[in-house]
Amino acid sequence: MRLNRASLTAGVAFALLAAGFIPLAARGGWNGSVFGPFAAQAQNLGERAVMGIVVDPNAAPVVGATVFLKDLKSKSIRSYTTTEKGRFRFGQVNMAEDHELWAEKDGKKSAVKTVSSWDTHKEFEAELRLK
Image (cartoon, rainbow, N blue to C red; front, side):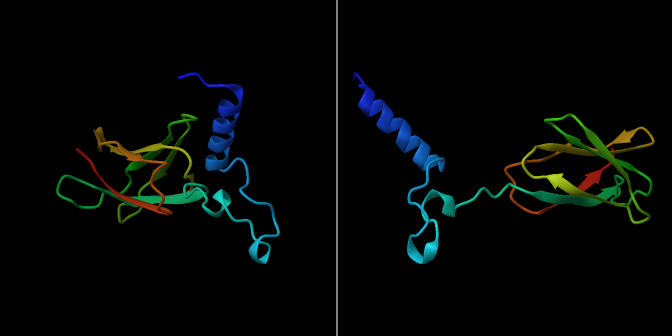
């Protein structure tokens, strides 16, 4: 099948319209609103809190464990030392980026958990079990 310039241009314009790069209608529609593709917005914009508990193999809370949160894009790592109840919390975690989460103490390490940018929850809670 041969594509001519007009059909190719129409296809590109449709793709841009569907992706929300071109508004379907200008302001001044019903009640001055913008309707069309801009009505739906991405859910993963903003920040979330990543929190949880670090436990030993017997499910007892671990005090003083170091919890790491690694941004997979920038490779930056944040850390947090667990409280007397084994709890940790990272605030202001970028929802648009994927992260890895794990804990360590006295040579023991938990499995690595992924905090996905596809997860739209504003709070991510995890149990990290040291092995």
